[in-house]
Image 1: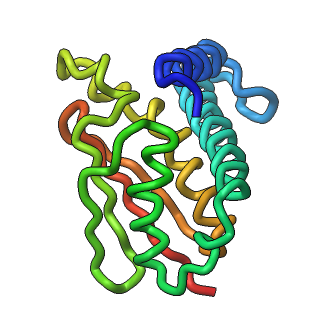
Image 2 (image 1 turned 30 degrees about the vertical axis):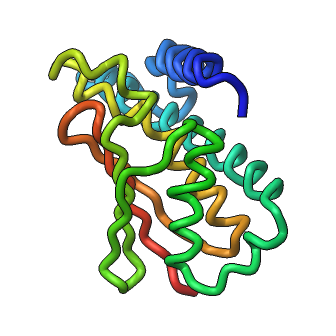
Length: 173
């Protein structure tokens, strides 16, 4: 992928631009006594969905560029290992720090120094801002998994900056 600094700046600007417009979620959210709070909450949720959708499409595009031998994975665990190593290196120039599973379709991927959160790691005041910087990456993982034939739900959590965990739940069809 491109220079890590360019990707980080682009990602930061995407988040900032979407968040700047979060107070206007569009039609369907009425004003009232709690109207402003409802509008802001709906706008933030919409911004997260847009970021996740962008990440999903980028993940699909990256998945389409994978060598044909990667498409021959037989087990879910092999695909997740591939994402933690090869895909993570392609996007963030480092491997994921750990991969855990309960062997029932749930995987936890942990990155102890997630590049998009490192600049925020200086204080706890930024902890509540972290989810908006993870939505794109959740979509990226879900999009890559989709191209590899796995339907999934990906969520992220942050207990302390810059460590984050991505939980991947495989949806059986």
